[in-house]
Length: 457
Image 1 (tube, rainbow, N blue to C red):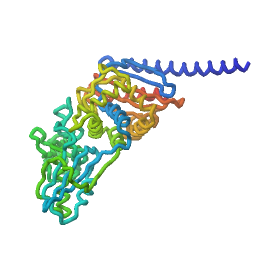
Image 2: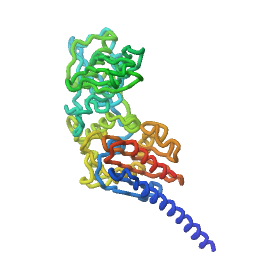
Image 3: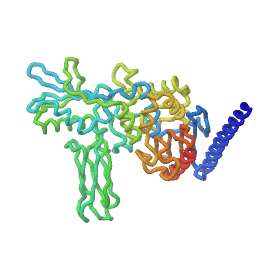
């Protein structure tokens, strides 16, 4: 009697679970009948991490551009191979020989080194000091400042910075334009401030004949002149990359020295001699870079991870290719994916040459979930639906609200979403949605939100 009762309970549970999975599959198939798929496509994978079983897949092995979802893969590899406490460091060394006093700033490609950090670095030198030469040590990486397959016309914008081991504020300047009185020029505020660049304010408030407000750097001339033009009716923010980011770093540092009463006679580039003495160091953890890469989708954070991964296989200066090799080896050796099923060109997803599959992304999410040292910081760094990051304004009022943590990715004709969802039964799902071939991302995001709502219901 007892055995029959247990069997009955087991069968009841089995049919309930099977029915729920059947509803999920039916619901996903129904969503894939959307009319937008007449001209576009989708790769979909849903995996039950709690039960360790595949629930659904559709075109899971199709190679597509991942856009910024590439940052999930880069973060998983970096967390696994380097560890969440791995440090990005920028150091300043002192050299004294006879009457010569030199300083060397050794770049470690810290993607989060900011204006406050450079003030602290400058303050480590006593007022009244005279520096014969302030050297920039950019020997960590090669001289290629962009990744392969990066679009030339993305040049002036902050999401495609000039890469170097010395990055101040990610190598970009934030420009904020605020309206004033009608027919007057708007206020323009830049951060960080420096004479390294200049601002030409040609905008006017309330003059429709001037057209839409634009903020742009004279990038075709390799100039750091930022021009503000057009009609200003509301506040606008834009981030402009700086041509030659290491020069930008050194110019601002020199200006900080000057403001603190430290004279710098010359600025040059050179590797740091072994005889130098460490004077100042600024460092932060890999975990902080993962957070910014996933939550705010900052490309420089992902590229910094790629270069630091590259240090594992390079004995000299590091190239982006070194880091991509480490990532590719991880995909083959740890995730069991054939090298014919992916192509890795950078860490952020900017490159036109990146190609991955939904299956590969699912394997990475599963790998991370099974290892708390990787999965915990990854999960906690992802945007939370309806609350934070790039998902702040999505999925509100649905079952997915606060129950989905996922990374978005958007470039022309690509809209991606991959991460974790908590179902109503408490199970954790890994899901990957790679949409391609669309003109507008808005209906795709609405479709993705419906999928997440279904998963959480």
